[in-house]
Length: 552
Image (cartoon, rainbow, N blue to C red):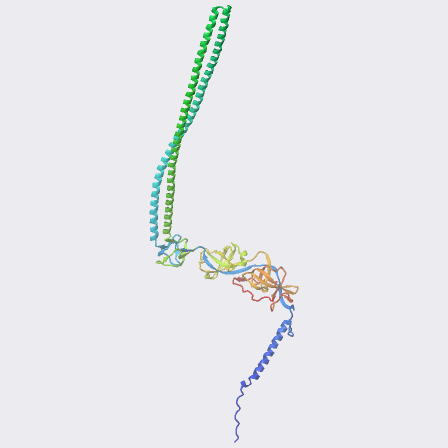
């Protein structure tokens, strides 16, 4: 019998792992070479061997031109339906809530009582303020009566004192006048006496002259008689004339003495009258000073009355302060009742009766139920294209996408610095009041600048920043790339409004296989973009910013 040889064991694949590894490496190298070959063909433009391309080597790109175009942007933005008037009823005083008359959703009327807060403390404040006011008024009326009596007495004293002063001053003037008249009269009497004395003295001198002449004549007659030329009778007559002249001299001497005494008496009387008149002046002046002192005293009494007036004014201020305190207490009492400020409904109830509230704690929210508007946010780049009063449409989700006519009632006066957006408020033509606060609504707007504006295809934009409204483009000038920074306005998806950076007819790259460099030479192929783009509605969601950056 032939002996069978034992079966050969199965070949172990792992035993040839070195051979497998080498084969895998060879296949990988082949694939890598094919990839490099293909990449080199792409760089070459139309295939061919892979060769290095130096800076400035041309590439083929799709380009378009900037042009003037009319833009209409259709925006659809989601907003919230809100009541035109929403009021939060907050506690205007602290205390325990005794009563809340309405639940969320209940209808309310303007002026209807909604919340009652414990008023015990407020009532106590009112009663105390009323008592303080009554006391202040009583004291004020007392001071007023005293001030009136004091004022009348002071005014009477002042009137009397001033009358006495006027009389005293008149007495002074009269005494001064009498003194002046007395001086004049005394001077006149003395002057008259002196004149009379001088006249008598002159007569005495004449008498003495006549006496001397008579004596001379008598001596002459006496000598003539001795000589026998005249008779004794003539001598006797001459002697009689001497005696008569002597008697006349003696008489004139007596008259002169009497005249001198008259002058002395006149001077003495004038002096006496002057002293008396001066005494009268002094007496009247003392009376005037006394009257002036009485006036000052009466004025002091007036000052006392003015002091009473100051006290009266101070007490009047206390009365006014007490009145203000009472009004404040009454307002605090009134603050324990919160009433509805509008006709509408309770949209939110935050607290329940029995809760202790502090000043400013919110309790209920009330909304006006008749008039509503839609509040929506729009991006800053279309701020100048949104006009108050502009017509629009409102689509309400909760009413099966029904369309309502509407208009822009208002827009924010400033753009929010954080979100770069602004709010508009849109009034709805809803006579049946079907649109309710809290619903979602879509605002459909058609906006755009008037006339034709410079535009650029949105496919040309790089590093686009929809917040700052900036971007970059590859601009082709004489077959070379220039990287240009733009300032953009709004866009409609196909084209964007250019504010700064480009001019009409500039050539820009709209499609390229890779990033381009400044100054790189390119081959251009113009795309057909003359056809008007289809109108579309823009959803106002943030536009993704290109992450592709141009090569330096």
